[in-house]
Image 1 (tube, rainbow, N blue to C red):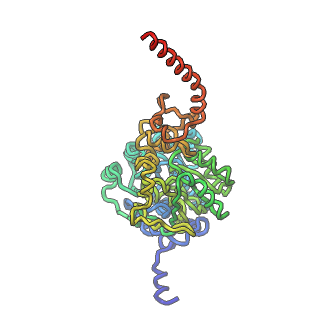
Image 2: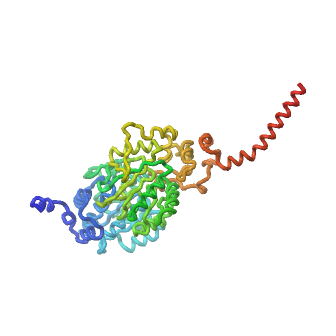
Image 3: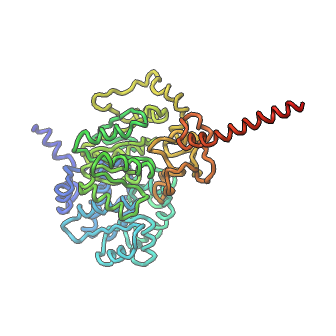
Length: 513
């Protein structure tokens, strides 16, 4: 090693340069597997330790949770602050951050965290607060207000407020609750905002509660991690599951999550994969909280190798050995694609993401070309990327499929927001195993989960009004159903009798004339 390299290594920030508490440094290296601080940790830790307000943007999987947990724990250890409130938009993210806090703080009892979230009985959480005297409260906004009203959560005595995934909290409608909570924090001295984007509601919160934060932006929000390899598969919609099975069975070391847009689509994909693969599970907001927790625990313990999920899983969940992210239903939004992809390749690990692009879907072909301007896609081994320069790829398909309206309905149903599917959407999915139920599209930012629960009897063909199905207008474009053929045979004798009667009457009246 040259003298210059030695000097460079000496000046390169490491955890010993950033932190002083030996427990944190050892746990980061030994139990959490960090070889050194990530870019967001290098940039944010000094600012957090200094007590400054910050607004930080970093791509998913960058290690930002540790960027504020570790320095806040050190400040508590030093006696500079006593309590910290960390707000997150979902229960899954709360539990994930609490698990990281427990690993980070293992081996000591001075700084204890507690997860607080809705959807479960409140009494055990009240007992945990009273028994453990936690210093780090990691919570969803609604449960914070519930526990404060019960008089058991001393947020008015917390000195630091952290808003993680702040843009998503605003998107899900939590801005009023966040504002109410910040108003209650009378002793607040520091505010930390971590957000990929800056929506209007968040801008208003910043202007009121931390008007002059130190801004930290280590990555663009639409930029993927360099440790992720992006591959793409072009195939007709009807062949997607077959290709997915081929991918997942090609290497026994693959541990994957496959994203579907809707609960119904996730359930059906799960049913198909379960017959082909072992160790498969499904995760979406239609499952109760206990079931979701058991599924995540089984995945992290290695008892599940392949997970089918909706976008409830797309942010903030960290599974150490997840190797592949499958975009079975391609997102129409680049930022959402990046968040999904960030489930692999986290904190410096290698990962692979595979986007399925339907070659008979002009809208997805256009989305792919848009994504390819920001993401470097590679073909699967032995395949080649199509040439879009001539504009020929997918053009004939567009005429065959009926134009661009199909792709939009595939992305969550822009035509069916009133609870009814459009005629185009219904025509597209009529005989497909991934068919949606009416109104089953996921609300990406709804606070209650991914969308409305599916109706019982999801394979029924009636629309939500119970009336004639709007597909009727398109029936000439498909073979008749068995039931329709039977009906035709059953009524043909009646038509024959009617025809004979008309012929007889014509002859009778003809003679009279």
